[in-house]
Length: 206
Image (cartoon, rainbow, N blue to C red; front, side):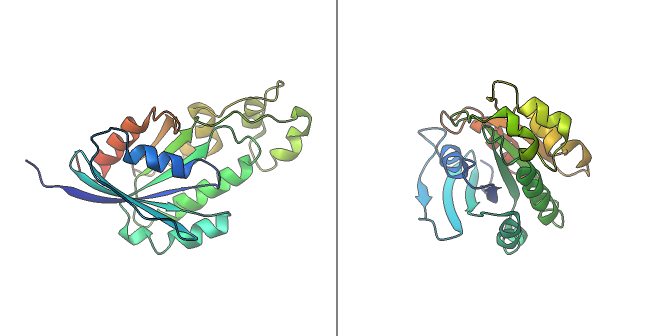
């Protein structure tokens, strides 16, 4: 039997993106996942520990409310981190520019250690509605062609993997470190297995 591996993963993203629910789903995708040690959140951090498939996982959910705060909260943890999960709310078509800026901040903070990054597009939330006539104001700073895909005339839509990849400009982030985008449903748990399996490979637990 192989030796157990320990991995600490930062869970980051905009507020109300579903980080807490996704963290709970990842730690309990299977009833036999093992013992769980959930520490009640402080103002800025919630720590969840569990063991699965030979890996002792510690998920650190950072509670940030701005891009600047994300950078500040990440700094002291990066050196002790094995990987990063960046959570995207697929129903949030209002904060597109802020989302892109937040991902850039996370990417840059994780660059020194070349941490693997999993982008989790969380489709497990009710679809937001919006007035398409104000789309021009909402997408300032975002590629207009991408924005038009995200904001159809019926005012409803979810970010999918393709559009999210373009919005975050993942094609420009090819510097050799592991980077993968997943569509997940934090309500049902769909996609959690694939995301955790990918992380397991890249933290040395394969």
